[in-house]
Length: 236
Ligand code: CA
Image (tube, rainbow, N blue to C red; front, side, top):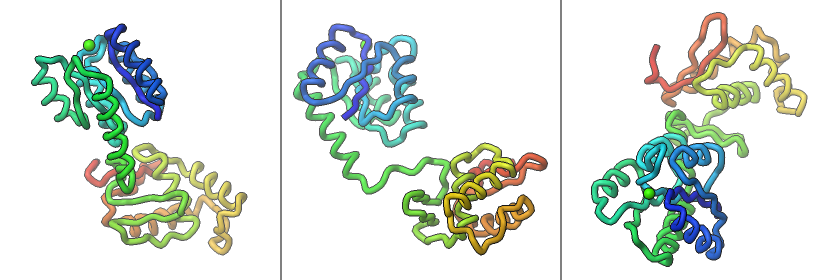
């Protein structure tokens, strides 16, 4: 279990780190909010313990940012004894639980384990907010809209995979033909769909657009540049 501990009180942080390690957690310590944000972007933690009163970037701001990037990360916030407003604000900003200082270590450990159990009990990770109604399982090679399986040819699959991995960014035609060619080389199974010619891109984009109807995602043509997959509501 990888844990981030964001706490600026060095004595408390050292004590908690030692106790958490003894309890079997792998702990990284952030002494301020800026380091906490940096580490949470860079690494995949199983949970975070976040002090609200942090220097550089306060804990609430860190929490709000983290909730955008990592909606499923369990976060337990630490607040001061008189910090009722902090507790309310913390929960509103997406904290999963809170503890008021001072607390006993067994209490923290019990809360953390409960949080981790709850997260693991969830059937599937929360899909990113910009995926619309589309569920995409690369390993199983399955895509569905509201549980309705999409029937995609190998080329359509590669195209959707590429657009999704670059979503909200422009994908150039060269990238599409390169992805197709790479799939052909590794036996992507597009035999029978013809060569991965640039002239075929519009045909496949057209087909994929129709299949994505109702997904909340649209493929926009960016003249002279390529294509862009984005939420329908983004408008332009
Ligand atoms: Ca503090």
